[in-house]
Image (tube, rainbow, N blue to C red; front, top):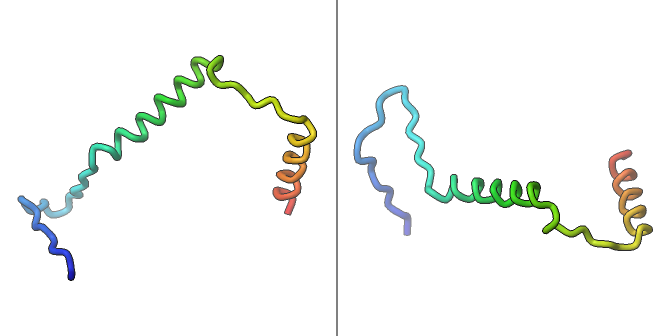
Length: 69
């Protein structure tokens, strides 16, 4: 069953662009930006994983091999 489209309440003026965003289209990127900014300003809360340095070296070698292709 096809969905019916709702007509616009007022027609757009010729030559103009009518773009409407939902509220979350602006709120979610803003929330992500604030979260990342908080981590940058308070790095003591972001703990790095202390792993085996050999694993890190292996990962870096794989990335270099991939980029060299």
